[in-house]
Figure (cartoon, rainbow, N blue to C red):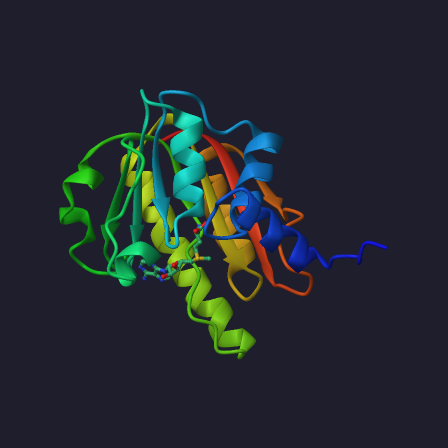
Length: 204
Ligand SMILES: C[S@@+](CC[C@H](N)C(=O)[O-])C[C@H]1O[C@@H](n2cnc3c(N)ncnc32)[C@H](O)[C@@H]1O
């Protein structure tokens, strides 16, 4: 008899089988399927890109005529292990703290994008109040970045932890996008406080 797999085991095993470095890829896959976000030829900025599963998924979805730029404060696992990174040719990875004051000095942030995705997550402490506040700070930074670089009509996806200030943040996002919706993909772990805000059709 086959053992019944927990949600955690199912997505972890699937990621291994599909050669993705993290199970989180299935969250973005479901969001894209539900909201139709990514097109061939798109330029996408991926915030909180390590260990790289969204980056690989996005690079496939945008194809050779598109481009994906990933930013994270930690290196991709291959680099940490001293290996050469073998990124797809349409993908770039930059090691950078998105909260750093010099972020907008990056030439990649002077280009225009069709989509900004943020899976940024703080180091969790288990103290919900602090984790939620840290997540909100990252979400606000992601919105600031999106507002600077999105094309008119572009889209924004942002991971957020439930907590104080989230309702106000969603209202703020709603000022700049025609459509905005909370979404909790199936691959989000049971009991997790995270959800995604999906915002479409940017209007500056
Ligand atoms: C859930 S992981 C992202 C997983 C990724 N989407 C994937 O599929 O491989 C969250 C990432 O946010 C990054 N992060 C958190 N705070 C950051 C910051 N201030 N600047 C840049 N990256 C940050 C962490 O280093 C971590 O790699």
